[in-house]
Length: 274
Image (cartoon, rainbow, N blue to C red; front, side, top):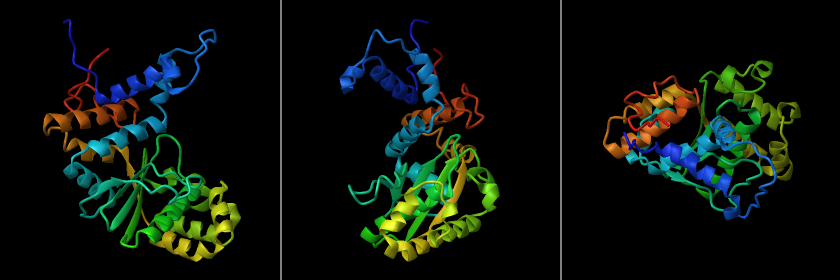
């Protein structure tokens, strides 16, 4: 056949990146044609294993997703019936980018939800507390927020497999994680592996008690990619636009080995073979 179906929208993302790979001058980078470089196929394969491109793709998903899908994903993540969520971003200067840069943020006016996406790397006590710092700063500016949650999307849903140094600190539950974080905030510096939290607390010692309160109150949910894809799958047979949107994400997760999905199944109906 002379024609084939157009690529999935997730492939379009990588094609856009490839365009800048071959023509870096359009974004102010100078290419040296005399300098040997590994081919695009090498970098394409490498990108498909990293967290940042997946963050971009899921960010696109949440920006385009209909409200019903967005609410269903958040309900599944939080385990409670809530609605009216939309993507939000902190105002410039509201949070310190050197401390934390949230992957994705949602709010419905009363609740704030951070979503942190992991591929192969683990999270840490430092990162959990950095999100609590961001929550503290945002809630100080948005007093209507009654609840803050952190959702970690990863290969695993068991605490012992998500946290670095989990065995050392016996991080086998949310309560154990919070207790260790509070121990660090009260002065046990050996808890930290990065400078971010210590820099914030040393510059803002008066905020440490409130930060401890935020660590205690902030919700934490671990969800694995198969569970996440299960929520998306419920919408895979809806109208064509949603089907294309969901099919592309399921295909991306499958290509990365984050879910065991048949890439040629009806869940990726617009897949094309190169």
